[in-house]
Amino acid sequence: MMTEQHEPKSTMMRYLLGQMPDHERSSFEEQYQKDTDLFYELAELENDMIDLYALGALSASEQEQLRSFLADPDRQKRLAFAKTLSGYPDSGLESVRPTGTKAQASWLSWQPSKQLAVRAIAAAAAAAMIVGVFWLLVSNRDLRKELEALRNQQSNAQKTEHALQQQIDTLTRQLEERDKNAKGSEQDQLLAQNTVSLSLSSDVVRGNGQAPTITIPPPTTFVVLNVIVPGHVPSTYDLFLETADGNSVWHQQHVRARSADGPNTQLTIKVPSRSLKAGDYVLRVTTTVDQKSEDVAGYSFSVVHR
Image 1 (cartoon, one colour):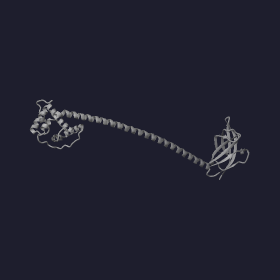
Image 2: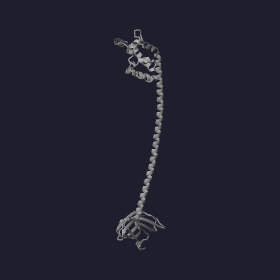
Image 3: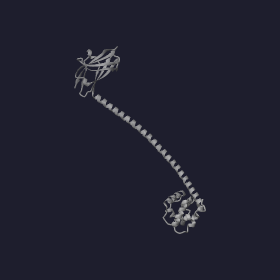
Image 4: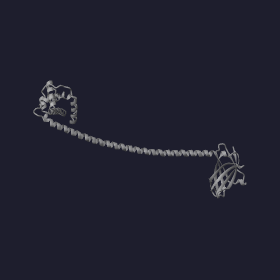
């Protein structure tokens, strides 16, 4: 609180406005540097002047006299902050040196309005804080909605990607299966083109007829022998292909037979054509009974290469 020994407001105002001669300024500075209360009163008056300017509570002539006072960079920052709190826009400041003493008495009238100015600034600051908090709440709500929308879009994109991948996998399997079937069909056709067959149904080894002849053209790969074993129950058989001189050229074991017309058994045998040279051959069919091999039938045929 200001004491009697302190300088009057008019003296402090002259100092702040730069209206003191150099010797008086030096004396005043020594005084407030030694007197803490005077120093704080001077700082409080300086703040009041900045706040009143920011609130627009001064006349045009009073504002003009404060322009040099407010040209200081530090006071500029404080003024900008005060205007932000009070809601008043910035106005440009020019470096104008105040002249004359007409306005000295008017500064004394600022003190009664100090409390009103401080309250106005506090109210403006509170309003600004309320607006800022409300804006943050609204912004956070909007950001949450956007984040949720992005998450939903990401989830839908993942579901779509999964469905597309399943379709790709299904189409890939279908294409592979089709290619496999087409390849198998081509192989079957090629095999059919490179295969000749011969049916053996009589036991010519025992003189029951003339041996049949099979002609093998150059592109042939396999010779298929369809053998009918009459009056025999289907089982597994061992097959031996020999020349007329008794030399073995091919054999196959555990060949499964199937039922043919009537009480007959049919065997289908595929023999590589390279094993059959031109000449006469005998096919022996045997089965195992009580761990002993027994002849079931024998068939003769001739091979001719074109």
